[in-house]
Image 1 (cartoon, helix red, strand yellow):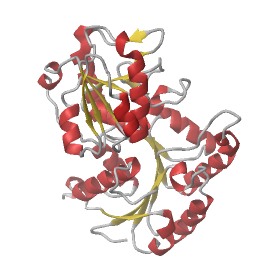
Image 2 (image 1 turned 90 degrees about the vertical axis):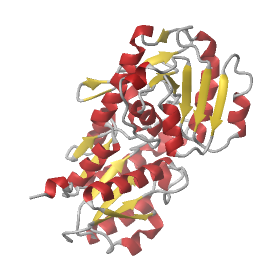
Image 3 (image 1 turned 45 degrees about the horizontal axis):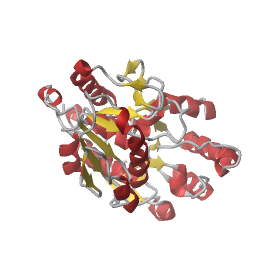
Length: 357
C-alpha cells in the first residue's frame, strides 16, 4: 500500500455535482480527506465498479438502498461489491445513509423489506467498519449483524459550518425563520408550515421566511403565495456559501422530515438539512412531538414541535442559549471534520499533524 497520497474510491449513487444530498456529502468529505489527511478521491457509480477495482487503496461505500435501485433492492450492486472486496488490498468502509424501508402492507416496502435487510446485512459483513447516523440505526444494524464494527456519526451540513460567536446568537431576529433542503422536503415542510403558521406565539411569530435549496419548484412557489404578514425569500439551487450566510441570521427552522410520526426522532440525524440548521445555531421545529435526540447520552435541546394540539418551543428568554447549545452539540458530534477524522482512522490513516515526528 502506498505510503504517500493514498487514494480512496468513493462509491455513490450518482457522480457528485448536481445538488444531490449524498453526492454533495461525498464531495465535501473528499475535500476534507485531501486537505487534512492527504487522501485523494476517485468517484464511481455502481456500473463502473468492475473497471475500478485496481485503481485505489481503500473503498468508501455510500449506501442508500433506493439510490441504487428504484425498489431499494440493489442485488447487482451487492454482487459487484463482493467482487470489489475480494480484489481490494485496503480497507472497506461503508457509510450507511439508509438500511431498509418500512411501510403498510399495501406498500412495496413492506414486502421488500426482507430483501432490503438481507442486502444491508451482507454489506455490513463485507465492511471493515460501518458508519451510521444515529443510535437507533446502530441498534437496527446490530440486529442484522451482531458482529458489526460500527460507529455513530450524524450527517453533516452541506450548507457550510461557520465559526460563530455568542453575539451571533443573541443578535438574531426571533421572527426570522428558514426552511431548507431538497425539493420534495421543502415542499412538504412548507405545506405543514402553512397549517401551523397562525399558532406560533407572538414572541417567535414568523415575519420573514427564507426557503433555501432544491430545484425551482412551481408547487413551492404556489405555497409561498398569501403567507399573511410574512415576507418570503425563495432561493432554489443556492450555493453553500450564500445559504450559510442566510442561515447564520435565522432563529428558527421548520422541518417536516418524517412521513410517519412514530419514527424515533434521532432518525433526523441522517438529514443534511437538519445538520445545516444545527451547524448554524438555528432551532429546529418539527410538526409533531418526538423522542429525545442524543449521542452517547449527550442530548440536543428539545425536540421542539408544533402540532394540531400542542406547542413546545423554548421560553423566549432561552432562545439564545438553546441556539448556542445546538451549535456546540453539532461541533462535538456532527461536524464534517470529525466525520473525516473518523473515516481516516477507519482507513488506518493519520492526520498530517499526527504523523509529525
